[in-house]
Length: 320
Ligand SMILES: C[S@@+](CC[C@H](N)C(=O)[O-])C[C@H]1O[C@@H](n2cnc3c(N)ncnc32)[C@H](O)[C@@H]1O
Image 1 (cartoon, rainbow, N blue to C red):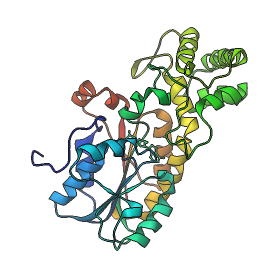
Image 2 (cartoon, rainbow, N blue to C red):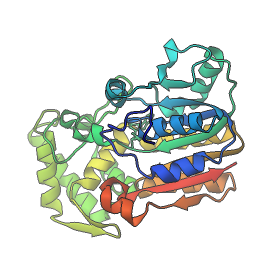
Image 3 (cartoon, rainbow, N blue to C red):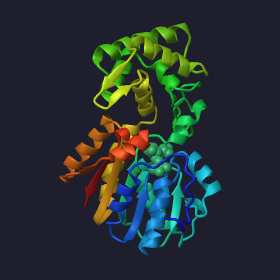
Image 4 (cartoon, rainbow, N blue to C red):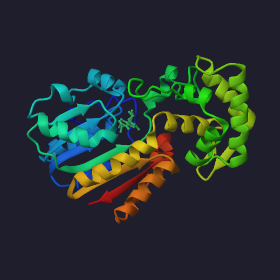
């Protein structure tokens, strides 16, 4: 990797990179490799490099609905993907600014714009949020910051922000979100919802004090919590539930999996990196549906020690 054409100056450290590359190395050497979650380009750039080095005939398409990682990637990398609109028929690495749940439309566009056909050799989905998005405090993803609870990964694609949900959802919908989506115990979800309703009654959410207010409420409801993965900050589940709901994350995943699998060529692989049990459940249910047992790869203890993001990661591999 020392002669790498790709910069390694990435803000977000890609999780299970070695394991992902090992899986990608096994897929057929023609057809598209789809990275549905470009982020800071860590996985994409390494995949691009690997296939170039191996003289594969694969082409890479990277998708992200938030181009903040791409904008940064452009400034420090020698090789960058071409935006789909600007791509030429021979482009070998294309970037699409879209929701990965629109994969079927994206595949049709690729067919129209390029000469590479539509077969897909691999699809990678490294779900959730990148470290870069998390530190953009004004976007409200992180409970450690200040800012408005917006949490939209792409405000042009989603009209409803987290503060809208906090202001508008009735008691039953909020408790349901906390219990069913992120597995909050019933009494905690009920207490939390009562506190949120009282807070919005006093003053609606939707300004830069949101994150601080949500933190205070979470602490009031439950000072400390732990689960099988260790101690977790009391605001973790509240923020996670809101982010998942605002960006319809589970629906997106449910929509993309059958499309991705249907477009895979024989021997192709679907690689899904999950970070919480709701995502795991969607992938496990899908693998049952297509009667293919998913292999699950876990990060090494060493990676977990050096990259806290890897702590809850699981890489599901579904082969076709
Ligand atoms: C965990 S990060 C991916 C990091 C990336 N693998 C890397 O190495 O830099 C997740 C990325 O996926 C994007 N994302 C999440 N859901 C998406 C969706 N439904 N459509 C498109 N992009 C999505 C997020 O905007 C974020 O940039």
